[in-house]
Length: 205
Image (cartoon, rainbow, N blue to C red):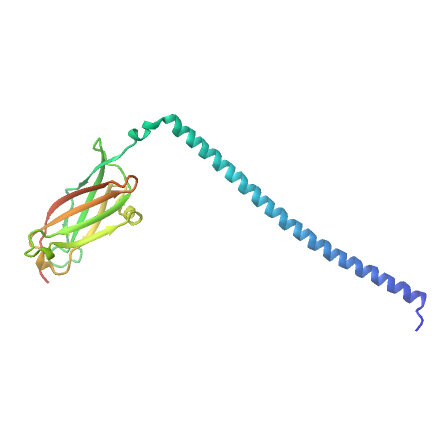
């Protein structure tokens, strides 16, 4: 079949149009890739700026510490002791006759006698020193790591407050329970202890 000039012209136009469409799609793809690379560059630039700022702050911190001298630690507020509050004692939590728990309240105190909020691990042990056999002496032990102990701090009263349930077999208690608190300071690793004798009105089950 012989192609007429009109057919040849139409074929050429179609080829040109098809080529333009292909080029347009290619151009759109390239523009998308360029936008993606520009966004990556912006993110990296912001990250570099953030790291530069952080580095500058660290350098200023180091300079400040150097200016304070090697004796700077002597002037920090440091924990000197822990004190069990006089409000520590046996309580009733279940509305049944007799005490069923010991509420332990203690303060962390600095060298000047001021209460100092200090982070650390807390271990509380309840003893019945009048027990007839040594294996019955330890009634209860509670351990709170620093991340859980922080939730026991009362900012309003400036002390730690922990409720320690007594064992259900209250016939072992007699009338006195010795509370011993061990506090391991998170910053220094130092261990502080204190203990208190509490009267208990326990009713056997």
